[in-house]
Image (cartoon, rainbow, N blue to C red; front, side):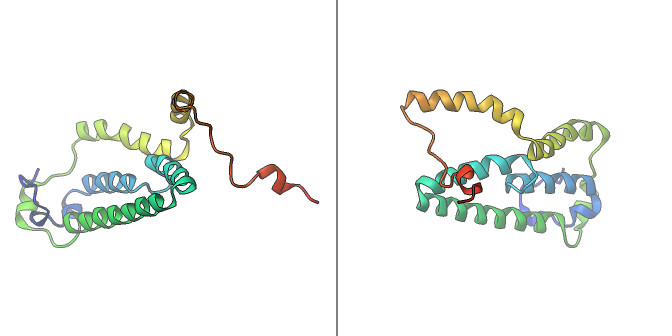
Length: 153
């Protein structure tokens, strides 16, 4: 819309195009795996599994997540907030009805799967089970037995 791919050419877009900025924010927070958005469940499961077997790899992955969060939030701040350059005011316009119709279902799916990921996990689990069988591996036992922990002695 602006005619540029340079972050420095933007600023204040949320004042000119609030729906576009809001959509960009939800997409950015989803890529950060914010709880309540679709990518949180997958990232959480990957990190839990990684920390159980490869602690150092889990630490490096967590550092990568923190750096990605820093990058995305700084990019949002530099492009969407602050003073509005004249070029942004002239060239950038908010989402139109057709664009909202195209993007709204995606946002609904991002949020819905963040709160109820079971349909996707039910599709993925059989494939994971087949891969585990193919490599002759077993699902590791949980570190804490929830049944034993709930009983009294």
